[in-house]
Length: 167
Image 1 (cartoon, rainbow, N blue to C red):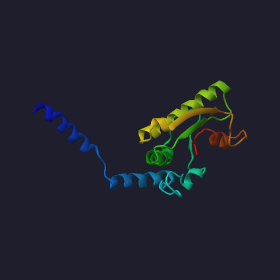
Image 2: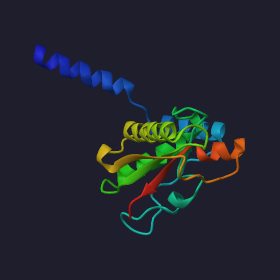
Image 3: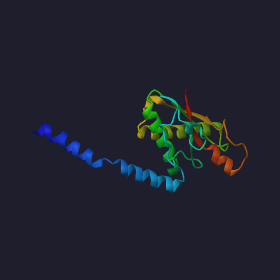
Image 4: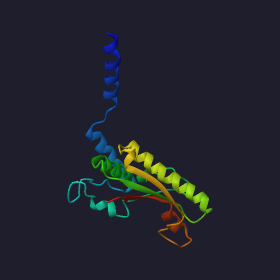
């Protein structure tokens, strides 16, 4: 009897924690209204294992960070969720997360910060169902800016983690 009690309690506890598709859709819709970023359809490719077109959309292949931070912002959730879902659906697909920093700070500091940013994105992907073996996290530091002007707008554009899929 004792052998059946623990598994039964575990099943009940797990069942109570589940969410329905309707609940998930409601949360996703609420998130997209708050962040202005709409969820993407990860199934749109031209064949099995192909990358959907949205992967090449610059607004969908980077996660941006605040100054001197590697904490993932709430506006990045839909982007991370979409990439995690893609990786879960294509278990042989591999991605490199390239962590970047703005030009402020030493080379060593920015390499370390870029690595922390890449690792933060990697951890978020794993929490959403991607396999750790699919994801590599590397730092580019401040060596690959998208924008080269010394303005706050450019600094913000350079503080990011980029998704780079291996073909």
